[in-house]
Amino acid sequence: MSAELEPWVREILRCPVTGAVLVDGTGPGGEPELHSTDPDRPLAYPVRDGIPVLLESDAREL
Image 1: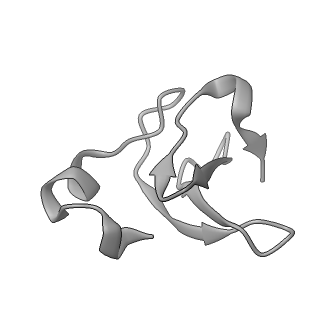
Image 2: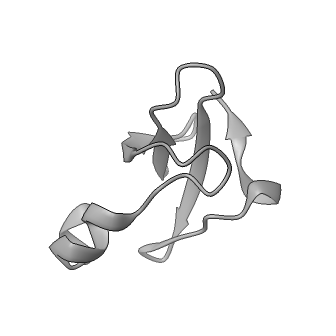
C-alpha cells in the first residue's frame, strides 16, 4: 500500500480520531489496512483500491 502513495503523503497521514501515526497493517481477511499507533484507542482504517479511507465510521477497533 505505501508504495502507491507519495512519500510526503505517507509521512503526513494521521488517525483522524486520535492524531496518532498510521502504519501499514492487514485486516482479518487479508485486506490492506492502516493501523493507528495510539495505545489507548488503536483503530484500523480500510484501504480500498489503494486509497486510505480515513473515516471514523469505517474504522474498526484493534
